[in-house]
Image (cartoon, rainbow, N blue to C red; front, side):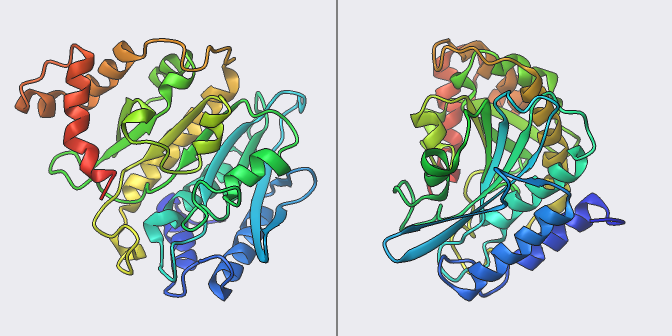
Length: 322
């Protein structure tokens, strides 16, 4: 948004989306959110995907809408990078962290990159129907996009969910977790090139430790390289208390800067596989040492083995499965 600071823009988008009406599929709040996001994609100067921003579909008698804009590159024949986040809510809940924060970050990344010369096109996909009862069903927005609306292969997917809050561990509030690095052997080098902005530290590990929590599910199933970015779950997950004033907008701004750099680096890097065909242990240890050195020491871990990684993961797993 012209004239706004990054944090102000993030706050504005979250506040507009995260109302008490919620964004549950089939409700006026959901319709209002889709209309607002369509306006934002247009305002940012993105192009429609396949000529359209709005990609409607239905399952039974229920109507859904995925919203997809793109920043084109000079070579449209190259498979694009997809940045994705769902915009619906689980019931009539505000959903500030789940998932207005991620949507706001994607819009802010589009703002930062819209005048850049890109190696390959970037798709900004705002998916519908991620929440129950559609989660992991054929009606899930990302699944429908992949099978019915996608017009070309996807180079790699960056999926965000639950990225607006502080991790509820003293001293580690600024953590951002990444899973899926094992999906391509080029990811460690990509992540090492991308330096998180002040205000966020990144920890990368295997997706199997937490499972397919969000829209990266369909990309993993179809063996497409992906990264899932999240701060895990927190006390306000799927509650009426998930409201805008509880989010950390400075952390969100840092994630925006990081995701901007990560998107460009991914677009510039060939991903030749094999999918889940290399040992990511050393890369995981590298990122854990960088972010968790003192914390690991308090647990008596020197972070030198897969067993050490699994003991660290055990300390955080509750923040993913409340």
